[in-house]
Length: 498
Image (cartoon, rainbow, N blue to C red; front, side):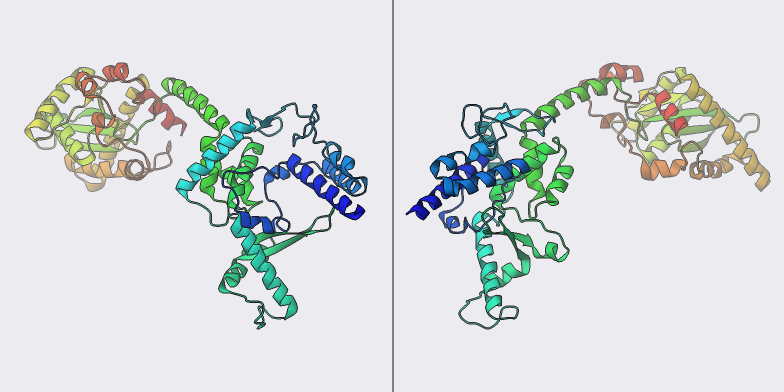
């Protein structure tokens, strides 16, 4: 009778300690009754048992041992000896240094994160599993895990009775379910230092063969495992949290980590604050530049040495990539220039803004271009009139025009010809395929392969119909949609820095 009483007291002490540690806390997907048969042999994988300090574990073991001989009074002292009794004497499951009371700290010690009550944690758990069920459910729940452990133990027992992989003993009744479990999982056996009882867990066979020991996470334990790692990492992103979990546990889906990050209260609040800051910041920062966003147009006067009927050379350059198009013109009137612009548009799509060395002529060229586009059945051909060039951009355009004349002179000397209208096509190819020192690449490579591009001009900016109809100049667009198009001097400064 005395031995029975001592055993009952020890069982009560273990149950009280387990409850104080949070091991008996029920989760959203409840285990089935069949799992109770394996409860004594299955090691708990809930991370709520992991943060107990070594000193508390030693005190708990000593008090549990004393409870075997000391009876019920000693058993009641187990939680207190382990430091798990709060100021009012109730078992809290946390060290007494924590003043959270019934609150559970979500963040790591000293890290970010609000404190949630137990009710809030359980609500978060229910939401997690409700959303996770829609994505997909893991087949390895606690019941299935206990079954696999039982199957592996049966195989282990048969191998002990008869050497060999599975042997031929008909009494063991090894089925294909046993063989499937054996191919995927390995049995991990530990010994409880306090009770000396064997504890069993599962690991992937491929991990064990590589010398890695990671317990397989049951589906019901996913929430606690993810929450523990997510909070201890300081609410990092999905990749970092999943990396930390994958070093400790196997068979836990990355989608579940992403799902928890989407419902974490601290992360939700942090994202809202960050989104507000981003909106304020994007108004003041420079807009991103694109190919085909701004074209520069210049007319080089070649009347001193005409090539047949050609008297002018039109240079159209994409402001971002420096991709250049050269066309010989018979005159410098708006109609001839508009025809050159229309030919460039049909080859490279519509730009958003057109700038010229003579700002007063831009309106005439664009008016002639719209008339020509309507005549050719090209609807949606609106191009904005650019403002006067920035001094740095004007200086750059003058150097580009001079560079074109130098290349034409070199071509004429090499071919012994004065047909500069024909040579301009060769010069165009040389300019677009030569590596630029400022960008370390060629304009053709930037324009055709690397850089983002606006292919629909003004119509690709997402403007409303009213704004699209009302804007005529670059200044109008800046007033209606500030920061939507990069300023020309910003693009030039970026290229110079590169």
